[in-house]
Length: 130
Image 1 (cartoon, rainbow, N blue to C red):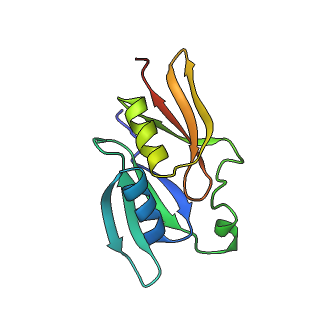
Image 2: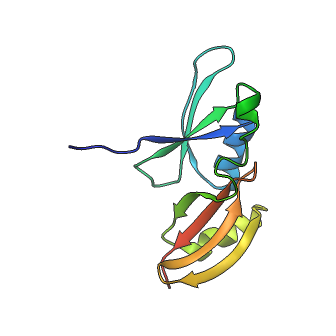
Image 3: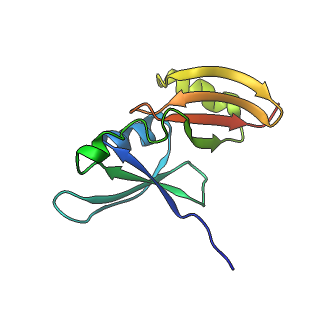
Protein backbone atom coordinates (compact mmCIF):
# COMPACT_ATOMS: atom_id res chain seq x y z
CA UNK A 1 0.00 0.00 0.00
CA UNK A 2 1.23 3.50 -0.82
CA UNK A 3 -0.64 6.43 0.71
CA UNK A 4 0.18 10.03 1.56
CA UNK A 5 -1.47 13.18 2.82
CA UNK A 6 -1.81 15.48 -0.20
CA UNK A 7 -3.36 18.64 1.29
CA UNK A 8 -4.30 20.07 4.67
CA UNK A 9 -7.06 22.69 4.68
CA UNK A 10 -6.85 25.90 6.67
CA UNK A 11 -10.09 27.84 6.93
CA UNK A 12 -9.45 31.48 5.98
CA UNK A 13 -11.51 34.66 5.89
CA UNK A 14 -10.31 35.81 2.47
CA UNK A 15 -8.33 34.08 -0.26
CA UNK A 16 -6.24 37.05 -1.30
CA UNK A 17 -5.22 38.16 2.19
CA UNK A 18 -4.26 34.56 3.03
CA UNK A 19 -2.23 34.22 -0.17
CA UNK A 20 -0.45 37.48 0.62
CA UNK A 21 0.38 36.32 4.15
CA UNK A 22 1.75 32.94 3.15
CA UNK A 23 3.67 34.12 0.09
CA UNK A 24 4.91 37.51 1.32
CA UNK A 25 5.37 36.96 5.07
CA UNK A 26 6.32 33.26 5.20
CA UNK A 27 7.82 33.13 1.68
CA UNK A 28 5.72 30.12 0.67
CA UNK A 29 5.10 29.32 -2.98
CA UNK A 30 1.66 29.74 -4.51
CA UNK A 31 1.17 26.28 -6.03
CA UNK A 32 -2.29 26.80 -7.54
CA UNK A 33 -5.08 29.36 -7.64
CA UNK A 34 -7.99 28.11 -9.74
CA UNK A 35 -11.45 29.67 -9.80
CA UNK A 36 -14.13 27.00 -9.31
CA UNK A 37 -17.20 29.26 -9.12
CA UNK A 38 -18.15 32.84 -8.32
CA UNK A 39 -17.54 32.14 -4.63
CA UNK A 40 -15.00 29.29 -4.51
CA UNK A 41 -11.36 28.90 -5.48
CA UNK A 42 -8.88 26.03 -5.23
CA UNK A 43 -5.87 27.73 -3.63
CA UNK A 44 -2.79 25.83 -2.52
CA UNK A 45 0.47 27.08 -1.01
CA UNK A 46 3.57 25.24 0.15
CA UNK A 47 6.89 26.07 1.80
CA UNK A 48 9.70 26.78 -0.64
CA UNK A 49 11.49 23.58 -1.62
CA UNK A 50 8.63 21.37 -0.46
CA UNK A 51 7.53 18.53 -2.70
CA UNK A 52 5.01 16.97 -0.33
CA UNK A 53 1.82 18.05 1.36
CA UNK A 54 0.36 21.45 0.43
CA UNK A 55 -1.89 23.77 2.39
CA UNK A 56 -5.33 24.30 0.90
CA UNK A 57 -6.61 27.78 1.74
CA UNK A 58 -10.35 27.21 2.16
CA UNK A 59 -12.46 30.34 2.48
CA UNK A 60 -15.14 30.02 5.16
CA UNK A 61 -18.55 29.60 3.54
CA UNK A 62 -20.91 29.75 6.53
CA UNK A 63 -21.13 30.83 10.17
CA UNK A 64 -19.86 27.50 11.51
CA UNK A 65 -16.75 27.67 9.33
CA UNK A 66 -16.23 31.34 10.17
CA UNK A 67 -16.22 30.37 13.87
CA UNK A 68 -13.22 28.10 13.22
CA UNK A 69 -11.00 30.71 11.58
CA UNK A 70 -7.86 31.05 13.66
CA UNK A 71 -8.68 28.30 16.12
CA UNK A 72 -8.94 25.08 14.18
CA UNK A 73 -7.35 23.03 16.98
CA UNK A 74 -8.77 24.56 20.14
CA UNK A 75 -5.61 26.53 20.92
CA UNK A 76 -3.08 23.75 20.28
CA UNK A 77 -0.30 24.05 17.75
CA UNK A 78 -1.86 23.25 14.39
CA UNK A 79 1.01 23.06 11.91
CA UNK A 80 4.66 22.04 12.22
CA UNK A 81 7.04 23.78 9.82
CA UNK A 82 10.44 22.13 9.60
CA UNK A 83 13.32 24.18 8.23
CA UNK A 84 16.95 23.47 7.39
CA UNK A 85 18.01 26.77 9.00
CA UNK A 86 15.97 27.80 12.03
CA UNK A 87 17.69 31.12 12.70
CA UNK A 88 17.53 32.28 9.06
CA UNK A 89 13.77 31.75 9.02
CA UNK A 90 13.16 33.01 12.55
CA UNK A 91 14.92 36.30 11.76
CA UNK A 92 13.15 36.63 8.39
CA UNK A 93 9.77 36.04 10.03
CA UNK A 94 10.38 38.48 12.87
CA UNK A 95 11.48 41.07 10.27
CA UNK A 96 8.11 40.45 8.56
CA UNK A 97 6.27 41.10 11.86
CA UNK A 98 5.28 37.50 12.43
CA UNK A 99 4.11 37.21 16.05
CA UNK A 100 6.02 34.58 18.01
CA UNK A 101 4.00 33.58 21.05
CA UNK A 102 6.75 31.29 22.38
CA UNK A 103 10.36 32.30 21.90
CA UNK A 104 13.01 29.86 20.62
CA UNK A 105 14.09 27.05 22.90
CA UNK A 106 16.37 24.09 22.45
CA UNK A 107 14.58 20.77 22.70
CA UNK A 108 15.99 17.26 22.22
CA UNK A 109 14.56 17.23 18.68
CA UNK A 110 15.86 20.70 17.66
CA UNK A 111 15.29 24.42 18.05
CA UNK A 112 11.61 25.38 18.21
CA UNK A 113 9.47 28.51 18.51
CA UNK A 114 5.72 29.01 18.17
CA UNK A 115 4.22 31.66 15.92
CA UNK A 116 0.73 32.74 14.85
CA UNK A 117 -0.52 32.91 11.30
CA UNK A 118 -2.61 35.89 10.20
CA UNK A 119 -5.73 34.48 11.89
CA UNK A 120 -4.14 33.19 15.10
CA UNK A 121 -3.56 29.50 14.27
CA UNK A 122 -0.41 28.34 16.04
CA UNK A 123 2.58 26.94 14.18
CA UNK A 124 5.82 25.38 15.41
CA UNK A 125 8.92 26.50 13.55
CA UNK A 126 11.41 23.68 14.04
CA UNK A 127 15.00 23.40 12.91
CA UNK A 128 17.99 21.19 13.61
CA UNK A 129 20.47 22.00 16.38
CA UNK A 130 23.40 24.06 15.15
